[in-house]
Length: 427
Image (cartoon, rainbow, N blue to C red; front, side, top):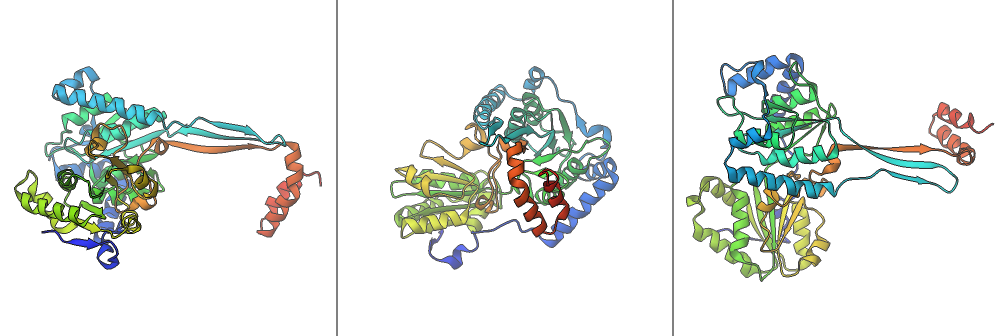
């Protein structure tokens, strides 16, 4: 049975707090070699990689996949799935449209004019890990299009035959994706960052990814932008003594089934609640569940039940965990929300399973992992825009500022900066 950890046991909690992205030296080296190979050889490197993982007859002509019209693409998936994707797109659109920034303009009392201008990125690549993970297309392509990005491409890892899952093709059509490529892994990231003969480089790469791809994103940052170092699921359930034990346990199992590297935890001031969760998991015999081997591994290695003696201890533990997702199973959520500082997304109450955020809530499911919620936010419309400030001095402002501006420039050893101020002072 799972054991309960005291929230003030810093030694035992150290393993789950401030995890950070810690790639092995071997992974760093192998990814660096791949990135450099694609940078130097372009399509030839991509083709070699694709032949090694799927179709032995793969060639550059198979990299780009035609995107059918939406009415035609709908036939690629069951009707209920197509309808669900349409609903998801509507919800994602409603939420992200509220994140729009209007340009801001104002005039200071001396007549100096200021503005803050918001403009879309020119191009974005959406990475899709593979399989039927079509929701990943919606979560990134929809806000990119709302922001006004003119070129949105999808990099989708194909199956063993070199084919992209039909649901991903449908999602690309539904979201008005401009280009779809059958390429995955670190090679795909390098291609999007540096460009190849077939793939024009992009301004930014977004989307969740396995470790090698995450490391590739880290290595190409600077050549292009990235959203965050996304990784395996991280879920923290905050529960009080009135929480439904089955619902709390259900959230742990639901997130544990997604990835062997998932981290799941419950923190509560109620020791009976934690004991009940441990008993229920033990009774279920998780190995017998669908995807039971994955769940059992997570439960055995990365599932934590944390007992807090006080509300202060509870939030020290919760904010230290800095999880990708939080489920609040408490009577009155607002006092908890007021003190929760580090989380990618929060789901409140018995009627809001975390799965809502993965598909139909409309909020974005691309969230920071590895405890990165302590300094990073989830994907939003801001990830697809750039902003710049504009200043137009009035004569009064420039005359008044010329002397202190010159003085500061000289003080920091920049005499030509100072001269630009004096030239405008009439001195």
